Image (cartoon, rainbow, N blue to C red):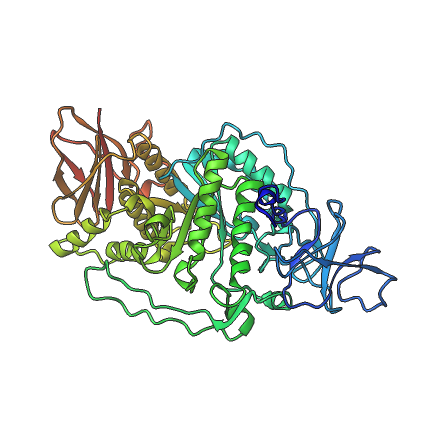
Length: 563
């Protein structure tokens, strides 16, 4: 070809793009020889139906998309929203879509197409506060109905408590079982449309929504994915022991549990072997779906230390980039939270600097160390105070989550905790832990139900926390034996973990200190002068500062302000 024709050569056609999941059945199956989409013709037909093909089901062949997208198969026609379908690999049993948008018939039942178009009313939503309290709920037990719509009816109660983010940790279950469908919303909760209504209503009330997801291992029943492509690795999940580096004493023994006996639930997702490139896309496309189609504000990724990924770009980095893109698209912060056993400094480092790019972490090592320090408090030991002081002021504390309730005091599922039935010592432990966590820079995590007076204590502390800017420096002071003071601007929290009442000096202030909250709640007197109220046995005299000092009872906390 001469030079005069080189500049008029037609440019190459752009590579095809696929909308997954979308109206057209599309699936990745690089090892398949033939692939069909199977449609039920009658109600009540299941994928296990053995009636000859053509009588109760319809099979339509799929074709390869092309060399630009190797291994991808696509149908020629779109499916109407609400159409049930499944895929048959090489003429085998119809299997659900690995990217199923709905799964109303169980783990291995028919998938169902879904149109994500929704009339959103949250255009003015700017996102929740970065250090706002996170409430983790199980939709199945949060209300008697066990649905997302019923849970949304309790938003006013959560706003009054001071919750900033509602975290759903079982949203992808099917019939109560956590399933491998990363794109699915549990039908028992109301399905994907109910989640859209839930998020829209939450944003209208000033609440963010976070979803709990797991990418470290395959859930039970995920073995069907191997019929399509190498989604799973033959290795079992790698377990690591928990360290306790923040404890004042020697590390506690914490032997890892053996791997699960059943192979499907113990196999990890293929993140770094042959075919893992598309598996990464399977995960990041799921995250993008939650951000774009459901306006979710954050994802909490379980057990990030078990994401054994040796690929050039770690899967966490790819999901973080997806969140950054969603932040730009929606003009509000979209966050990633990593749940892990031990602290890894790379998790909070931006991806551009060699880290994983997470926004926040929930480190069980730090949380356990904090509550262990309070349980094993040694009021007269300076080393104990030093360990607690270092923990309350660790770097990046404003990006680390800590639960307000010690694990031993957490209420069981379905158990109603009231003032009459709750152990007074358990409430005291929770109350003192809450006072220190909410005085620190840690991001608090809440779990309901709790007793009525503890609920009121949390609400008061969260309201006081919001009155001080997040970037206000915190100072930790050591008072008399067993007393810890945390100063944050004009707010001082004095906590006495000892068994004897103490009088402690307050930081210097030009204005007088006044008590705004105390635990146990102050005694309320009846007109006759006698203590009244149902909690009178566990109440305390009202704390009153005397000049530059305040009296703090045993196992008590006092919050003071200088206005």
